[in-house]
Image (cartoon, rainbow, N blue to C red; front, top):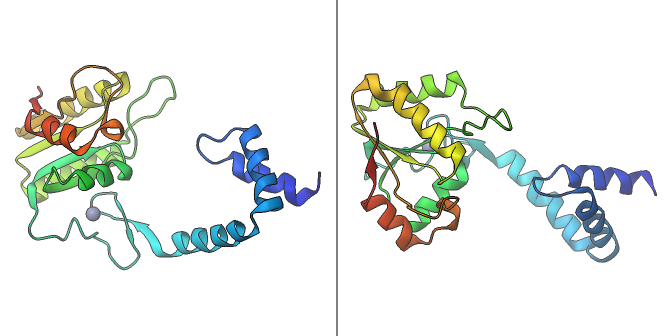
Length: 199
Ligand SMILES: [Zn+2]
């Protein structure tokens, strides 16, 4: 196999959710039948790398030169109502549902004993700082319904309790394993209206 092809397969296999076999199929397909897509991918990746950055306030993706992001600087939104999510894609889901009009904060992960994933002390300190600076009155925990999310929510309650504010969580109900990514706008709206107080 030519080295350039091996290299392409190695890089594709590093994409989330792509195994070695899928990477091979993708590589052959791209090179044999989809030269236009190779060029479009090159341009799109190059642009994304150059033009996108992470908002220093909420952790959302934003355009370079727009940090804080448009959500953080929108004066019509309520900065005292803070929604804590696992990552930037969750912000996109909630925004599409038009269910929430406060501000956001990304944990950039959640607690998972299996994968040793965790929420860093830096992130928690940043969150506490945001709460103090913005006079946050309610923190809405918008995580999925799984074991890791439950552990993360419990940690947040313990960590934020001394600040004496209301902490609530989206109410997805049963079945476990449901969550943001699987919910339509109506379900998200109901989960927000029926949010449950924690702690
Ligand atoms: Zn932001």
